[in-house]
Image 1 (tube, each protein chain N blue to C red):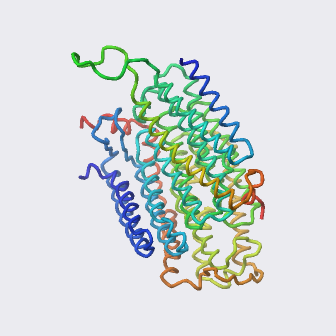
Image 2: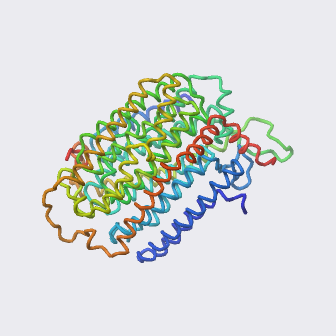
Image 3: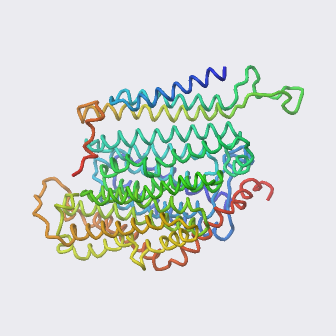
Length: 505
Length: 117
């Protein structure tokens, strides 16, 4: 039983999605099942991480086919950590959706699709087979299309057309890369590919193949020249959807990049330089985009792009310290970005507006809630004891070791701009005396919600705020985790042994 | 045969990208379909084409004696075709709805979400 532990998160999410479909019109049952199921999933994910931490990398061979031939599921520390983060964000967003998404949307199968999305995310993190990774990516994008378009407003549909086109293009490029890789090596198992790719004689074709993967995952991760779908679409759906997208979807791309470039391909000079140039440009373009925007959710969208740059920079430097920094940043970023989009959702419910020029007075009207919002906002900036500070320290240290001064400069620049943007947002939205906004009729203002709904909306922000504080104040534990992940990623022999020799154990 | 297929795949990719870059929504879908088919054929081609050698071990032996065609790419294509079928049908409905709500099929006029506000 315990040997199959790592596929239980997948099975649980699939079971939840199927059960939820039987309660199609009964939204209160759906809310109950979704929240309690997500809590169970969180417990399972915590247990999985503890188990992997103690017993090393776990594998399951689907259908008992031996490793290079069948589909393998692998949980090393990196995968287990990301499954845990998915579970945390999933629980928070499940509760937030129950409070904030309006019933007509819930009646179009919002919760089943949401759990299918979490299924796809868990699958992408746990699979050890490159084609299976493609299938999980497709599950993620199909469900995200549906979540993005539920409700069918004009802006949603316009955003969805762009989101759809670029993501499907990314999938085709990813598929092309898999085809070329299969043609070169005749294998799809990632651990097997690690050895096979190193033995291929035609290095130019391997390099082209690596670049194809970079472009395919780069579109999903929203790196510099490929990010235009993100600010066009992330501000259109309900805030609950934006928060799961902003927290996790681009991070799957980053996960795939880290996995593929540490396990399958050796980074050569060209690829390292390409990654670093992309990272620097992503940091700059995201930061500058965030300065000029006025819509809160567009500001956060650009900050999502900007902060992807940190992780790509960590990957590009490719030392143990740098990878640990990138992984730590990934952990911090998933929690904080999910939280920020939920904060924007609460602000929208309070004032029925997204424009920071028109908003104001929130600190005067809701002082306690504003103090709660301080945690995610300033964790993002990385004011020292909070969570964003520590990974940047590792990244800058790694930049110093590898003499990448331009990268250090752009990391500092992006941090300053993030500080500027958040301070501007704080001044405009919370402290400024805003104009008198017209009261909208039929708008579900926060004060008109039932107290259960209010708790469902605020509790996840408190929960994720506490997680952020934990990451900041217990940074040593997280750093230990990130260092171990970095060690396992760079010395991939344990992963390969766990996959290929599992039958002999 | 391989060379012919390679040219065909190249043409499919090229025309697919050309169609995606056009301004019309309908041509966008056609482009997506073409490029998806190109990718499927590429997997087929890279699994090495062999005529009349199914991957079946003859009855009187225990292992493969001759070269055989690889069955895995075909399983991959089947998966990829089903997935792209689903995505394409979603795309058609999405474009129909978008055309109905936005009242244009010109992508250059669909820029409300990118506008600065």
